[in-house]
Structure formats: structure tokens, C-alpha cells
Image (cartoon, rainbow, N blue to C red; front, side, top):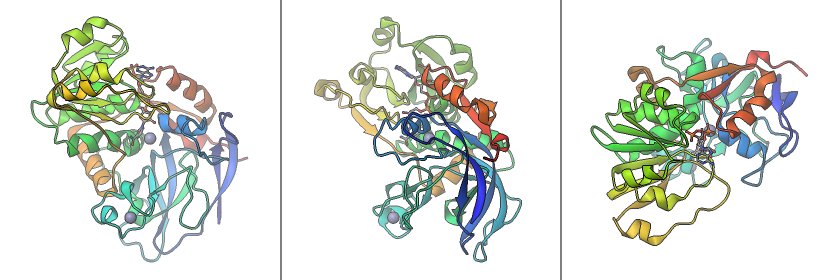
Length: 349
Ligand code: NAP
Ligand code: ZN
Ligand code: ZN
């Protein structure tokens, strides 16, 4: 076992504090990673506050991990000491079911093991990236391409793959009219990825305060959803809408912005249910769908795509002492656009 400094939440909603956790011995297929940076995803906050239920405490959050390989097990061929690598939301799966076989480990029928707030197949709780080292099975590690700085690569491990996956799955491409609801961590990456795929992107944000940034990220249009006229003006105008909002919305109002056969995909994960009116769908043969992170091959493909197209999260780098305040700012939609923790600042406790 290796002791490593970490930040942990002792109970639901409690502030995070420095602690020391143990990482398992390096198995033959394992990679020991010196974590350099870890992004703060709104999912970390939902889970630390136990908003989805079933949280396991103490919790060390963090599933946007970028670092350097420190050691590899005897059977690891793909990585060696010094490699720049990432770990996202998953650290294990059965490896045998139909979804694992096609590289969509997030749907594993035996349970995909989440990077934190879960139990591994050994029954032990998993601890995430708000820590200085992690031991991960080699098949759940990805390479960070040279063109991406580690601190910018980190948020892509969740925000990047979660938005890349639905655009790929629904074949968003050249000339498609795409809207992104919410320009936070996921949203600002979604705008860049959709634009890089050739779509004509519109941001639907609560206000116009981030309009300049949105246009810089590649959006053609930017609307405030606090204005009622937005919903009139944009009626039946999009082929595809990605909802990245962490809170409940009037989904019917957004469905009506879709053209015939358009699809609204929800990646935002508010704890409370939405209310959907059947006519919002029936009226124009619209679809409402959801999408969950992405598998390992897709994660590597996404990183390579971002490096090639110059997609990079806009980040605010913080130390360990800034994490609790950063959580409050994310909840207030006051994030520009992803907080990333420099994990070297986590003091041993
Ligand atoms: P975030 O940085 O907080 O961004 C969410 C954005 O939504 C905010 O910046 C804000 O954008 C908008 N928003 C927030 N509250 C709102 C409200 N009451 N009404 C309207 N708009 C509101 O969060 P994130 O890290 O991007 O995560 C977003 C959601 O995706 C979370 O629920 C998270 O758990 C979920 N998630 C899901 C997956 C998946 O696999 N499906 C993966 C990762 C995250 P504006 O200021 O522009 O309005
Ligand atoms: Zn996440
Ligand atoms: Zn499986």
C-alpha cells in the first residue's frame, strides 16, 4: 500500500479537508500515476452533497485526472514511466459483456466502476483524483497527446468525453444547427467541440454576460434564456440540442426549439425529475434522450480530436485551499469555465 495526501469530504455536504489515503499495491496490469491536476466537475458537488443519494463517505472526489506515470506493473506494455496520462470517470468494468466488448464500458452489465464514490470488484471504496497518486488498471488509462497541456487535458476527461460522445453518436456535423444549453464546464467544451465538427452553434445561457467568450469558443449565436423573446425567435430552429444544465429546466420550452426530427440530449443530471408534455415531442416527431460519459476508446479519440482541433478548456487553476470556495462558485454559475486543482498543494495530513 502507498499512502498519499488527498482531499476528502467526511460527510454529506461537509467541507473538504486534507487527509491521507492508501492506494493498493501495484498489480501486474496496474499503472501508478503521479497526479498533477484534477478538474472540479459539478458531479463532484452533486455527490459530495449526496444530491443523487447513495454517496459513500469519506469521499475523495475527482474524475478529471491528468498526471505522469510513476511506475507500471510487470504486464503493462502500453505505458512506461514518464508518460503523460489521464484517467476519467471509470476505473474498471467486467471486460466481457457486449458493451465492454464494443468499448462502451460505461454501460457494462456487471457495473462499470466509477473512479470515486463507488466500490471496486474487490469491495473496497474507490477514491478519486483530489489526491497525489492513484493506481489504475492500464486499460482505464489514456494517453494525453503532446499538443495538450496537462492542466487543460484534465477537464476533458469528463467534460470533454461527456459532450463529445453525444455529438458523435447523433452524427452532428457540417452545417447542423446545434444549441448548447448552459455554458459552464461541460457547455464551454461542448461549444468548442461542436464548432470543430462543423456545426453552426448557438449558446443558450441564462444571461448575455459570457457572450464574448461564447463567440470566441466558436459559437455563431448567443441568446439569453431569461428573455422570453428568445423562445419565440428560435422556435423550431435546431437539429440538435445538448442540455448541460445541472438544475431542472422547463424542458418543454426547449423541445419546441427543435425542428422536425430534432433531438434534445440531456447530459445535465439534476436530482429532481423533469415534467415532459407529450405534445412537445409529438408535434414535430422530436426525440428526447440522455447520454452518459463515454468509453475508453472514445476518450482517447476525443483527446486526439481536441489536440488536433485546438479544443482546450478555459481553466482557473486553484490550490487545495480554494476547493470549498470553488464549489460555491460553481453552484452560483460563477465558473470561468472549469476549476482545476493543482494537487501538489494538497498538504499531507
Ligand atoms: P457547471 O460548470 O456548473 O455548468 C452548468 C451550467 O448550467 C452553469 O454554468 C449555467 O450556465 C447553467 N445553469 C446552472 N444553473 C442553472 C439554472 N438554475 N437554470 C438555467 N441554467 C443553469 O456544471 P458542469 O460541470 O458543466 O456539469 C453540468 C451537469 O452535467 C451536472 O449536473 C453534472 O452532474 C452533469 N454531468 C453529467 C455527465 C453525464 O455523463 N451525463 C457527466 C458530467 C457531468 P449559464 O450561466 O451559461 O446559464
Ligand atoms: Zn464529471
Ligand atoms: Zn462489461
